[in-house]
Image (tube, rainbow, N blue to C red; front, top):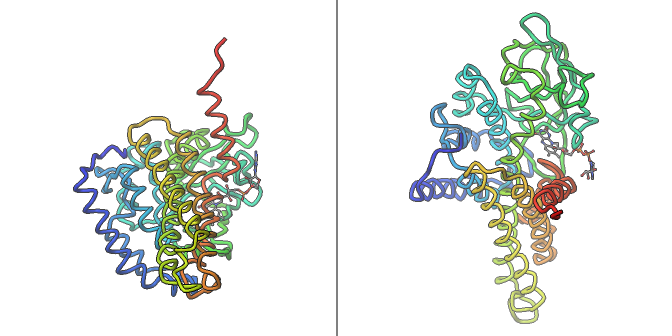
Length: 388
Ligand SMILES: Cc1cc2nc3c(=O)[nH]c(=O)nc-3n(C[C@H](O)[C@H](O)[C@H](O)COP(=O)(O)OP(=O)(O)OC[C@H]3O[C@@H](n4cnc5c(N)ncnc54)[C@H](O)[C@@H]3O)c2cc1C
């Protein structure tokens, strides 16, 4: 898993193909899609052809088996132009990762090839109306009934919830277990009777990708859909994908930070005040210098975490630092770029207003930045014990 070695010529070719696609197909349409908040079916079809739905799935199950570092570079490239569409394959690949890491061989053979081709697309259903950060507080339950489980509950904020057809669904199989995580299980949950979309959620940014409430009402699935076919492993399985998830979000942050910097750099050289381009005013130069430094630092932290992941090392500290820094860099660069654009930064005709609306999500998803700081601090202290 994620062990397929890609030589740098192969990587460069793939990155060039993605870059060409972004420039030819995505960039010219992004404003139109974003303003209409319309699901980009055509682009999704092209993403399927590029193999993005199988990017990190092993070749033996039909995927590209890319290392996390190559995958992160792809996410950065796309997010510099339109972060939203990376969400269509990001959480889909976390679902695939849960099956590939923890599923039985039968589950892998049944689901991974269809996920890799994009024939089945989906995501991760963890969050509930009363439980986001504190996942052990979820209330959705699965009750064993013969060869099936019957699931009842509600999930919220689920990316790809409307267009996707299959989700990794976190439930309680033993609501009375102490500690709670011992009673949690993760299921492969395809859409069928008993599983419906409650509503589409309206958002500040991150437009076009569907975020939905999902309702499970006497939803009956075969016992063989329990990932790994062992109860009580769900919390560990769901959070086991978070390192890659955090590298994903960090890469999105790098993309936005880069995109905002590029827009500001172009604008500052063409807009003139007091007889010269605004990039010649020191106040604007200071902003550009800080933005460029932040974008580069965010990229290096993210690739550092991705490289550690590819070496098979525990990398929650690096992934947490990358996620925290890159998402804050995205927010700060988007804000600064908007200021550099003056009134035009506030206009819907310019791209920066969209980056400004998209950036805050990176501070929330895959663990809020408040939680990232706590995770980093705990891990840091553990790694630096006082002798004696
Ligand atoms: C656009 C979008 C897409 C999403 N996609 C998905 C998805 O596909 N699947 C999915 O399962 N979820 C998804 N989520 C949900 C997301 O993961 C949660 O919103 C996130 O985990 C935070 O949970 P919460 O919103 O319930 O906030 P809460 O947990 O209620 O937190 C509220 C505030 O309290 C802080 N806080 C909480 N606990 C602590 C603590 N112990 N110490 C310090 N501060 C704390 C938080 O940092 C935050 O600032 C998505 C959310 C959004 C907005």
